[in-house]
Image (cartoon, rainbow, N blue to C red; front, side, top):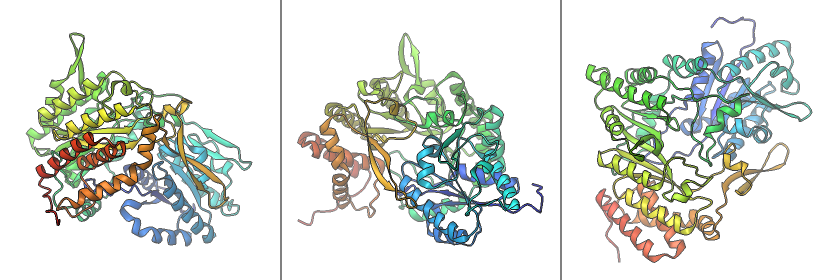
Length: 564
């Protein structure tokens, strides 16, 4: 904490863009990555603010005013591909304020998009540099460097020379004065470094959960229970692994850490004891009643990961018996179907011992990347779900439902290689599970993310959108989604958004529920019905309409009597 008092104070603003998490069955949560960076800087004597536009979007003008007054010397943006345009527009608002301030401001980027799409993000955002991967130490080093440069009066036209900013730094990307791009990888993340960031660094971190929970209470409907889903406001989030171990063709999470380093690194995990410590901490400190474990695949899928999961269950159950943790505490994890399978007599069967142990420990809800119920598509390069078939998916889901768990299946409707028949098959199987009280999250199209393995395969074409850089007037192309190969499916997607909105209005009118945001199962069925209409498949439409009406009635979303 001790710093030379003669060194110019450097204040940092870290911005989390809008996610538009407006689903009434979703609670917004403090962005742990940015708060972790803030905590690390403050422990080392630097001031840092976090502006989460989901939470404090109404205060955007206040932060722009501070920038106009020269309050901040570093402004960092967490660039997300999903909301890239909005993030860039916000960034340029801060550029305008910084330019008018007359004070040097260094603009930086970070996160998955910035790491794996650094050239476009640097150019489009007018950023000085990108800090890739886990960047706590690099951000601290940058702040110290800026403080020194301020003391030297080294700014030129409101910016510090990039060569001096980045001297001897690794894990950074930037354009030099001649426009040449540099991407200098960091050394591989070590076990000790990961634990310092994700465990010991978290133990004294203060997250504004109470403020977020209060906003969630104000913005949600009265009764959040639907099917087996039980909505709990007092939810805490944990991240316990370095990166995703899976190799789904459409996903970039697996490449985030390797893209920032000069060599690959194995998955690094917190131990069961460390995860348990963080759970106890959040229960005692904040009164958390539910935990979302946000790792892409918490069980990891190997022996070490599954052993960790089993040991964590033992620790949770022991703490419950001792009264350290409440018996009502519940958990959500993201996982893969393969995590819950074992081989027996040369066959893959559901690991019931593991499921029953998880249930006893309070692991109630599971986000499962099923994506499709078509065997051919599961093995396709775009999905690439190795080691499972559609029957495995159904077996695991049935086993979870049979013992009272609450699985949430993620479905990608317009998989690029899909035929109409395969899409309809997935709709029918997914509907069957929805009617068994399964949750469902349906993504209409396969989005295109920088770093996804599919981008290395020329047979997969993708659509783009145009956006013009305010400063230069140059138009860039931003990747949006992979183009379906089947012309009929491409037509369906082209019309799906507008037609689903119409179907959605019809569904809302048929209920006594006075809100536009629908529970995930109803939202999924709404998309499915719209697809049936676009296909002009009357039989499928009637089948899905019946399922919808059954779902509405069983959840007491009372039908409104017709005015006719």
